[in-house]
Image (cartoon, rainbow, N blue to C red; front, side, top):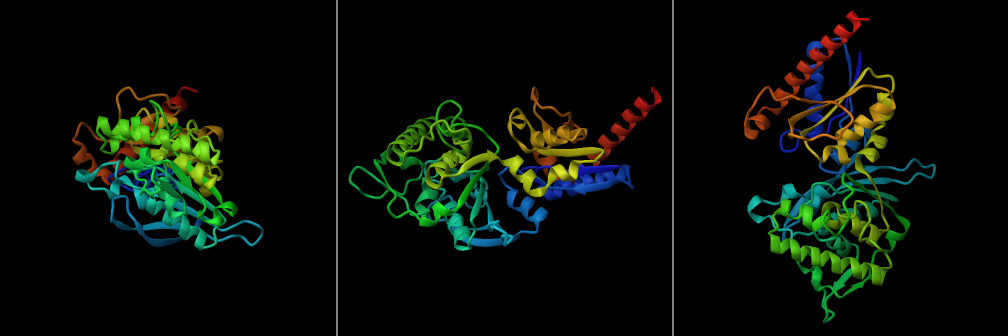
Length: 386
């Protein structure tokens, strides 16, 4: 048998590479002669740089940039793929979570009115300094709700208040902006192709938007959510009026606290499904063709999974190739459905989240082995009745 193993990370416990390795051990425990083809995946969030670098051999570079909190500095990784010399430009893959991510903010300091995407913009600058003509920005796992204004400041944009004074333009000050000064923007933006890789199609504003849905998850109080929504609405209005770009209803514009909309407005980016883009760069469809089975997965399968997350994207690719696919998960939310592939929970039984995460590698390996035995049993039963 040829089995393609293409999971996302199990957030907080295992990287996609580690999940894939554990799943491969489970497969081999039951089918020692099986060919396990490992292709760790991502959808624009954490692990995107590692997934693409691992599949393409891209050079991983490190930059010291501003973190999401005031005065914070972090070391962020990005991937560099040199051009082919036949008209194909050098490509940068940036993971905003590396510079402005939720995991970089201690729990007691989570406050999206003060966090910024400034460091993500500094990664964009590093990519352009390296001569990259195409910049892919994965925008999952953010700690911010600044509409990409922090990123834009790194690229030379200035956000001014009613007195003409420059604002730091973090989430809490978006409502104070009265004008956007683009006179100092980096001219290289015009000769660079920008692509946003996202796992959600949320708009910037409204009940499904960046503030109302995601800000509470990042530590915002109800009063702060209202302030952030008003600030994003103000920013969107100024972008439309002064830059001539309508970002209020762009699908995916609300991703990463509005960074999706900011990249469209300030860099002329186009928004794409993160898992589709990563699948292209890792040649997943080619690996899947001719396989007997595809295994994918994520730590928690919930109602969002079928709306653009990695497992559903992988399942769609498998379906297009006519290959059966099973989603492996550490936890399956009650009532979560809507996907097109069966889901198998690898937890051996009821347990606390802490216990599940502590032994996640063992649970994934043993759970995958149980899944393989079940599939073999079902195949045998089917064969016996034919």
